[in-house]
Length: 228
Image (cartoon, rainbow, N blue to C red):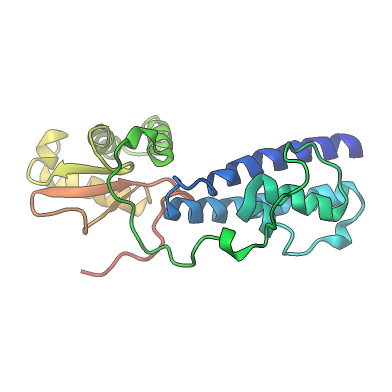
């Protein structure tokens, strides 16, 4: 059983490292890198704990072991396993750079909001948002009025230059989805409360409301909304 567990956990770690590699792509937005790594770290940590358990080496676990794979993807995982003396099949050979090189790390500040994209459909954020939104539209636990508004927001996202922000006319929002003003406002507030949508006031104006479709762990808010 130990060999089977080691094989399967190794495959899981390999896939997690490949996802972490996305954060090293220069085209990946800084805000997405941060959320991606934050979501991956506990998964990588747990997988490494199981791997050590399968080798009867649980006492060697330290909280630093998941750092390299989380921050440096496949290369970092290879370095970690090499240091532990655990065989792997990662296609990187021996690491050719120091995974602890500070120049290879992301800056500590991620305050900027993602802007318009020249090709929003090529953005990972757009692809994930569309995928998750379709799942939510089929979730009957979400009331019909909320799903109706969510589908209208998703429709406008398809025409937006922003990967995950849709722009809708404030004046016609309720009539466009065939709801009363009160119903539309209630549905929007409920979507925001559920964490499915966030209003980006800095991108909107008197005519248009800017709504970001949220995928938890990817583009969920990093700060509490400002009080107005």
